[in-house]
Length: 102
Image 1: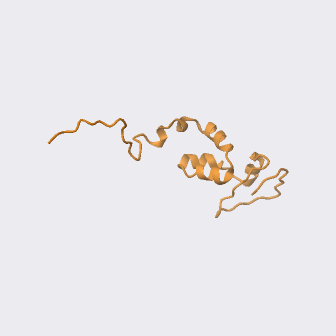
Image 2: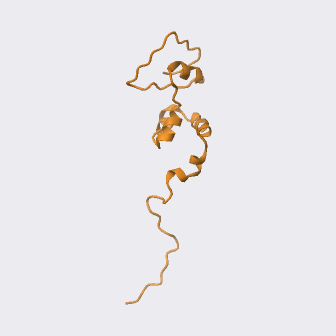
Image 3: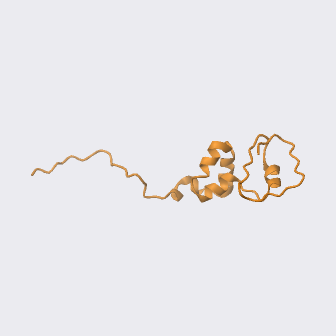
């Protein structure tokens, strides 16, 4: 039989890269820098979808605060504060003096 000498110009790529997602350039950024980048995303759906990427991104994209008061004081006017279901949230006399969505 005659062996073909045809060589393709392009290499076929597999579905998954050999490098893991942790080797990408964006994952080399420190947490503070990633949190700043994520802060420019709209809460729903962009920041929500970002939180689905991995555990680290879920923590950084959600901007977890220990209590509602801290989240309210850190929020900018027009921000949305997502409150986790199933937890116990005790608050007293929170004054919100900026437009927020809870």
